[in-house]
Image 1 (cartoon, each protein chain N blue to C red):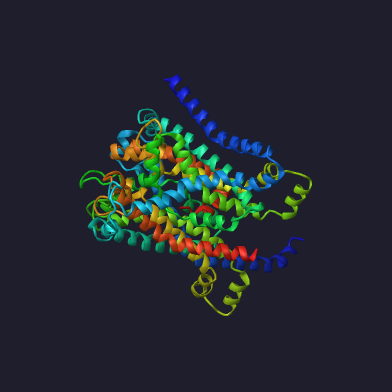
Image 2 (tube, rainbow over the protein chains, first blue to last red):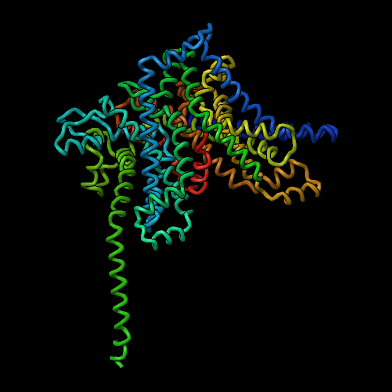
Length: 327
Length: 305
C-alpha cells in the first residue's frame, strides 16, 4: 500500500516534469537550430518559430475540429452518408430538442436577468457599508467551486425524504416546518428547471457583482454630488445616473453570462442527467454523442451553439480593430 | 480649578450628542441596506456551510438528522469525525483522483503559458506578414464553444490511442486555453515601454535574451493571472475529462470521480459531502491565497470558449 502510493506520487511528479519541461525544451531546441542558419534567414524565420507551437495547437484543437464539426453536421449518425439539413430539421422539430430550446431560453432569461440585476444591486449597496469586502468575498466565493461541486452542494439542499421521516435537506426542512408536504425539487416538472437555474445564479452573481462594482466605483463623485444637490433621491440617482453611466459594463457582463450559460452542461448532467424535462442544448449534445452515438445530431447541436455566439465573436473582433486603430 | 472645564465641555458635549444622533439617524436609514446585505450573504453561504459541516459529522448522524442540528451542542466534539474523509480518500478512490487532478492540472497550466508567452511576444514585438489577421483569428477563437471540437478530436484520439492518456488532456487544455493566453499576454506585453525593448536590442540582445531576461519577468502579473485562471479552469473541468479520459479510475480527476459518485452513491451524503469538499479544497485555497490574481484572471478569462 505504502509502495503503491509512493509509486503513484512519483508517477505524478514524472508526468508533471515531462509535460512542463518538454515544452520549454522545445523552444530552446528550435532557437538553437535557428541560430545555425545565416542571418538573412534567421530574422525571417524567427517569428514563426515563436508562433509555431501556438498556431499548431490552435489549428489542431480549435480551427480544424470546428470546420470538421460543421461538415459532420451534414452527415448521418455514423458520418457515412450525406443527409443535407436532416440533422438541423431534427434539432428544430424533435420534442426533446424543443424542450431543450425552451429550457435554454428560460436559463438565458432568468440567470442573466437575476444575476446581473442582483449583482448590480449588491454592487451599489456594498459600496455604502464598511464590511463591504466580507460580503463581496462570501458572494464571490462560489466562483472558485466547480460546477460538479456546486451541484453536490445543491443536491444536498434539495434532498428529499418521504413525508413523515426527518428531512435532511435544508429546503425541505423549512417547507415541512411550515406545515407543508416535502417537495421533490428535482423531480417536479414545474419546479426542477428553476431549481437548476438557482444554482447557476448562485455561481454567477458574484462575478456580475465584482465587475459592476468596479464600474460603480468609477463613477465620478462630483456627478453624484451634483445630482444630490439638485434634490435627486437615491432611487432616482440609481436609475438616472448610475445605470446610464455603467451601461457598457452591464452589456459586457450580460453577454459574458449568456455565453457561459450556453456552454454549461455539468449542472444538468450531475443533477438530473437531463431527465424529467430538464435538458439544455449543451447536455443534449453530450447525450447524442455518448449515449446515442449519433455524431450527426451532436454536431448539428454544437453548430447551433456556435451560431449563437457568433454575434459576440464579431463584436469582439470589431472592438479589437477599433482599439488597434487608436494605438 | 474644578469648575473651569465645565463651560468648555458644554458645547463639546452638545456636539458629541449631535454627532451621535446623526450617526444613529444614518444607522436607521441604512438598516434596510444592512438587512438586505446580511440576508443575501447568509443565503449565499448556507449551502456551502451545510456541506462542510456534514462532511465532518458521523455517517449515521448525517443520514438521520439535518446538519443544522449540530448547533444545538456546537461544542460537543464527539459528534465530529474525519472518518468520512478517510473513507472517501481510500475506499472511494478520491485520493488517487486527487493525484490525477494534480498530474493533469499542472502541465495543462504550464504548457499553454509557455506556448502563449512566446506567441504573445511575437505578436507584440516582431514584424511578420499576416500579423494583424492572425491575431484577429485568435480574438475570434476566444468564444468558440469547445463543444464544436469534441467529436473530431475524440475520433482522432481513438485512432492515435490518446484517449485515456494525460498527454491527450494536457494538449486539449492547452488548445482550449491558448486564445485567452495569447490575448491576455499580448495585451500586457504589447503595453510594455518600447524604449526598453529597443534599448536592449541596440545593446545586441537577441530576441531570446530579450524574451527570457526582460519580457517574462516584467509580465509576471499577467502570467500569474492567466496561470490562476487556467489552473482553476482545468481543475474544475468535467467536460474535457469526461470526453477524453472516459471513466478509467487510473486517470480520472476529482470532478469526474465526484460526478460518478453522485451516480453510484447518490444518497450517501456522508461520502458525497466529504468527496465534494476534497474537490473544492485546492480551488478554495487558491481563492483565498491569490485572491488578487484570481479576480483579475476570472474577469479577464470570462469570455473563454
